[in-house]
Image (tube, rainbow, N blue to C red; front, side, top):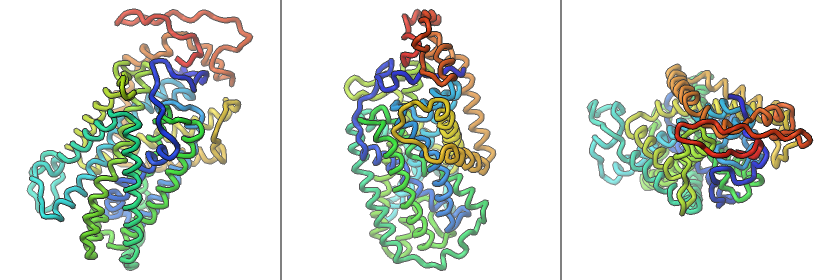
Length: 512
């Protein structure tokens, strides 16, 4: 269970094929910013402020940002060291062992898909606001998930959030068209998003009433920390962006920079935007689904409110893009490693993208977005991502002291204090999540444990060859394969397979 993927050959095209390299530094940064800035500004900031954090929602973002930054440094070190798809899954697999990698990968599959659903629901709120502003009203049956009817609407009127469903399927289609074309879309829409956020800040500051900042901490420390736990998923888009390392033209140089740049840009904008929002309206009056549009409409800037609504719908698509891409790349990496059926790792011959898993992720996220309320889905995302952060922060400490010889293009500062801060903050934020979030997460992990021992353990690529030598060598701080002066050992025979013989596997330490 604790066998590790070797570091030898990590820069080579892995067994089972790789992904096309088409992303430069600023495209990667745009993907990161596109994932971080989205529902957190346009929907979740207002919802968390109204739910009890109040104007202190800016501190909720800052607290989540500190925890996220500590983990971001760890991700940056790994991203420059291991230019492979899979992000935390791959890092955990190579440093802490297969069972840890499996759980993180299995965890991220659910978390990323759930985030896509959260964002789709948030966009649909702005879409409804825009339509209502121009005098159009959608039929009630297609306006939201069952049980989310607002006051004044009869229970049972909502059947499905149809717009959110169509968004999820549309993003899946875009991702199947190839990463180069999809990245162009992402870059253009990120530029549009940043422009809208800057307009919100620069115009909204003239309508701030400082009386709205009193009380600043209506929910006290508990309200602020609870808000931090809820908005945390809005400040870690670099995690999903790092799953695209294999598609970067120069991942070892560009990925660490893109991670740091995207988080820094996003945190500055989050703090300024949340201050403007809670200054324009009392936190008890903020619209939890279309906060900024409602706030500008309330001060007589209806034209700008509609413009923000349109921009939010278009620009938040970038968040869906990044996290759906992340889900498909983790799924692809797990399947290529043999932990899930290799059928899922099949890439399109023309576009070199994993089309099968992309469509599956799109359909699952569409179902969640269409039939579940936004808060329940948002809570589901956070515990898994925090768990991934804990694993990555621990792994970077282990690897620094076990393998100091590995070439690193970025080194986490303040080792081991900074990664430990990431672990502590992540555990602290997990503590503030609701018990039912723990229960859902536990059920998902239990299902993953059953699948691992029923299928993945036997089908793993590392089960095809004897991996004891690689494991012992890693533990001793050497290379992934046997020492050069050791007598060569014959590879272990291939493991039996009910579908027929697998054929000869790669030699130990080859990267397979």
